[in-house]
Image (cartoon, rainbow, N blue to C red; front, top):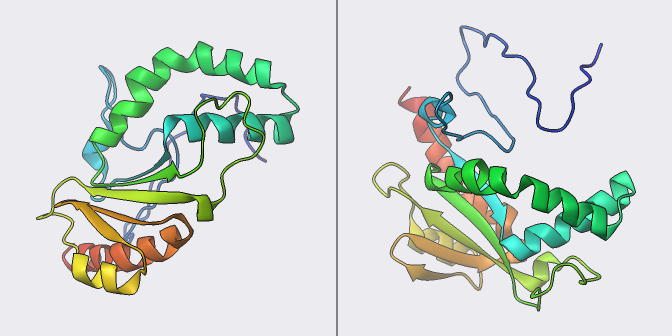
Length: 184
C-alpha cells in the first residue's frame, strides 16, 4: 500500500538495518537545517545537484506542464508562493553540502518564463565545488585527464562539459565513497 502524500510532506522515518554500510538519500531536504531540524548533521557525504536558478525555473515550468498540465502562469504562481521556503530552506542547504554539482546553461536563459526549450546537456557546463578538500579528497589532474574539456576555475572548483556530468560523478565520487566505506 503506497502512501498518499501531498507536495512538501515527508514519508515517515524508517529504521535502517544494523549491517547497513551506506544510506543513500535523494531529495530536496537532505541537508536542511532549521530551528527544529538539522538533517545536515547526519550525512557523512552530502552532495548537492542543482541547476542555476533560471535553468531550474525553465525545467520546472516544462515539467509542471508536461506532467501536471499546469500552465506557465500556474507554475510561476507556485514558484512565487514557495519563494520564502526556497530562500530559507532549499538554497542554504548548498552551503552544507560537501560537493555541489551545478548545471549552468551556455545558451540564453535570461527570461525563463518564455523559454520554449530546456537547454540540453550539450548546451551547458557543470560547476563542481568542493567545500573541504581534506574531507573530499579529489585528484583534479585525474579528473581533468579523464574528462575532455574540463578545467579548474578555482582551487576547489572544476568545470566539466554538461554532457559529462554522469562521468564526472563516477570519477569523483567512486574513490570518496570507497574511502568512506573502508574507513567506517
